[in-house]
Length: 432
Ligand code: UGA
Image 1 (cartoon, protein in one colour):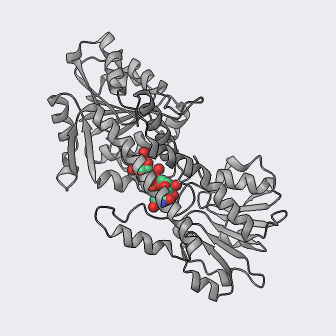
Image 2: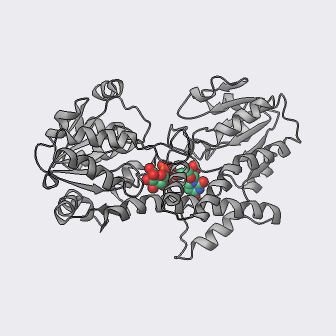
Image 3: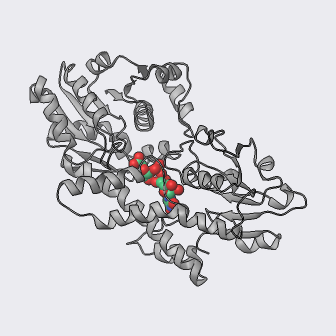
């Protein structure tokens, strides 16, 4: 099939290249000429394991193209995926849909034959209805169908999540588009992926409800971890004990810093704001947002306690500063509130991240980037393991520094407390 992906961010680029790899002809379009120039040179604007290889393979075999010409790309395609951003509005907590509606307007001007217009971006319930309205202004409704097909990719695992999805959700209000979407996904369905067809509005809500539920699960275990710390219990025992109940499931029960990233913080806010519009109070999700927003402060207080409230001039090393491992994404990372707060109190921050220097800290006093773990921990007072990169999972701390031993605050519970303490380090972790 001939596909057009509008937007070459995370969603558009990963889905586009994976569709190409399944044998489709895909044009990835973006207004950002710099991004397209980069992609045409075989360079990938984001860090995602395996993406570069897959892009180059499919570009070479000519199934994948990049373009800034939206009109031409739409005319040449059967299915058009809208994959633009839906960030939180500057004022308030609802999703800013301007990029979605701009894309819909552009599509409405170039419909030359029957097209399926699919929203892959995360959009509030009834957005599909509004896109349909825009398209209908310039076109007969027989010429197009608007479908919701949310993506469930995790950064860092995106290619595997696309290739082996737990489910494929297609929300359509007509049989023809459902049939075509089913055949597009046939290679994945034949490998065992569940395909479910719902109403368009239901598909839109499935995406938000899923992210809000996962955020709730994480926040729940984070609060239980707080209780574990005060009662001498290991939170990991709780996660295992709860997770073995099939009704609960063990995944996303890892306690840690506040959840971050480009999705959970924005989507939890957007779903409560949509619900408010429909006069429905999502009080559980509202309380999850509050709990998560206060988590960085809670962990900061723990850091102050670890340092006996003497933060000034203390050398603190962050291992990893992105919102999680295997990504270079800094959006809503817990480090973005912790590092400035510590720097304000006069701490000397060093950080090492496998994805390198971060411009987000460039204006802060006393924040220094290091190129490797070893240099970043020399003469430091406290090491904070902030993300769970493999690079941080088997560090021989004892061999790393001679003489002075630092304190370790392992926010991802990577190490065994007893083993690390036996090596002579003061060691703290989350909920144990
Ligand atoms: C999330 C969802 O997992 C995807 O299914 C969804 O498609 C995506 O949002 C999206 O809407 O685009 P992502 O934000 O890439 O994916 O990352 P996650 O792996 O879900 O992690 C989100 C945050 O939760 C991170 O800060 C992570 O450290 C934290 N987390 C995750 C925990 O603290 N504990 C866990 O057990 C799992």
